[in-house]
Length: 410
Image (cartoon, rainbow, N blue to C red; front, side, top):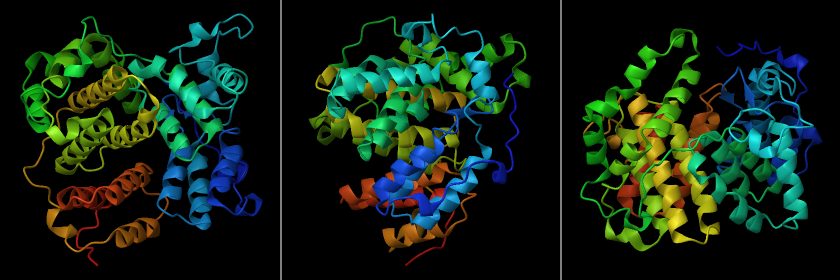
């Protein structure tokens, strides 16, 4: 059972101040990092990820003001743990940092700051601070473990603002939380997308797979103490079990997906299409604001930022397939949420502008689910680059569904 950490009152935590920050927003983000990540641990309450950085970068991308940054940060840090709080103490317990090797720390969920230092050192010494070369060489080794979606987010979001420091922190977190999908069979990644079923039909088929659907229920019953675990810890464990013990079964469904010809031009177009399909599932899902679906959407956008850096086509396709496996595992572990034939928010987006959507989001209190900032940011940036009317409406429907802004029209 994870240690429950009771956050201290905000007045006991070092406060974020706009007065200390440079004028530009990029400088604001870098200073934000200095004021927070060096003072608060990467996780809190045992299994929750510190998502402050990617949320603030999302706010930057959608034009949030300095005042919005300040109010959001002051609200968010109240739940975080200091550097030497109970979560880090528990994770580092028993580790002799003079003797333990970096390899021994991979996936152990401990020694984060030793890993972090390693990446910062090699970026400077081995790659001469060339961020592209650094990511091109170091990220592929961690591809099988991208189910650690919050770590992937930090990498991609940091790269979107060209922040070397934050990229190192994201890679360190990915290494720290590395839990790879286990594949015992060989897969020809170049054949991905040549299946017979559209994405929604694959979800229908996998939902009817009795063995896969009931696998996690059997494992929960056979494990002791599940009722004592926090819900987030249980969900993370379920995801890891699917990827570790049913990786090949999930991958078989991935290879049954049929992609449209226009998406098969290159891996980047494939990932964009996959991201849109996951958004479509989210919009049609009866359970609104599913945190796990929101995370797989924003981590997909993060992967889209770094995908062009990878040279080998097969490796790019492997990354995409593992991301889809993560999505399928989340879909199953969440109890196969029912999908509506038509989204309830479809009629509300007629005539709605992005300016109106962003204005409405930024006017909401900072106490809203912080995942909403990233979801709207992903849809907004994808909407700016995709002129297809149907797809543009999908992005807006996702925002409306997330913010529950039914009836909001320009």
